[in-house]
Image (cartoon, rainbow, N blue to C red):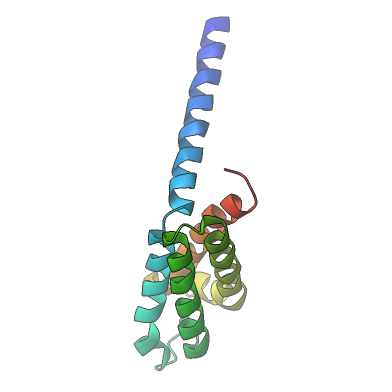
Length: 131
């Protein structure tokens, strides 16, 4: 029984370390920020139709542009600053459009909300020093 408990603790520790490594790789890569930015900017034609659950055109364009810029910061080696900007603007997106996207039950707005949430969690934990 004691040996099984130790093996479980070692497996949990290894899984936690693998998760932290994945989080660090995500937070030091511009790809998640650019994915969110590209998805937002691809939404611009739909925002003019005022469809239920979609973000407004001004917030879509502005947040998409700033998130693309934060991905550039990350690409040039400014991981801490890129993570901070991505976290802040992902959080801003969630505050402005999160509820609308979540409760629209439409795939695209829900996907945008999940991308913002994932970016906020990964980049935010890196920015806060949990890496």
